[in-house]
Image (cartoon, rainbow, N blue to C red):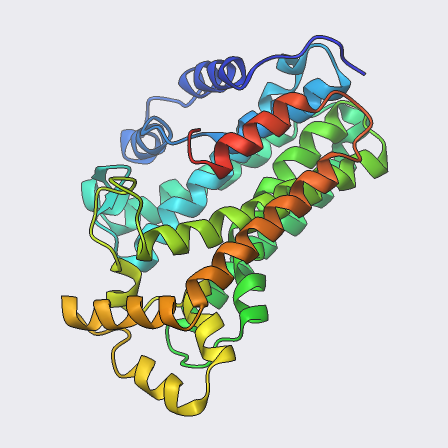
Length: 322
């Protein structure tokens, strides 16, 4: 158990330096330049930071596990490159997406390279932990793909239950947070109970964060996103608010909602927003968000070690100050 704790800022510094010095070859440029490009676009880099902070609970020198931590970020960026292709997204973190800056075949191939690089980095975990680390990562990688498929399937569905939506979020977003934390714990020799608790902590925090994301898209607080309210509504995106409304409303009210949901224009968006407020959908989403956040903290509270830095980071993520 470690008595020397690093801060999230120190973890981010380690991650940033590690990403800058990844030993990508220079040629062929068309393969390696896009990989370098996406990794240097920034982002919160919370996943590798969580790996280092989790490892630090059980080991005084988390920098020993930087390579497995970087694997979490490289894999995450692999998913972003391919997600952007599937979504036909022009921008990522305010810059051109890889398939726009280069082209579609280049983006596919460079994305594949990032996945391979993630496995190379993960292979540098301590030898005695590697089987467990790989088993968890392989499971997580499959689950992330399952979550992405469900998200695409939901675009074509009208009826999406709340349970189906939460499962999609868990798979697409939350399991990688859980895996990042559990990887750090495994590398540092944590017990099975502590590793499982940290996984649940990340999983539940991720679900809370996504529900919050849905609420803030519909009801932004100030300039949190720098965009108008209801972007998901106009696009017809299936969110927690949508699934909750469809599950809890009578058929006639669902029909009213569907007559406006996914339609462009302020009038349609305003109707949906008023609907969510007057029918208690917004309040229900806020309560669910808080419930998942509390579950994450409860799991963290069972970990046998100094977890105050992770607790503070979770609060910062929840309050969107990280």
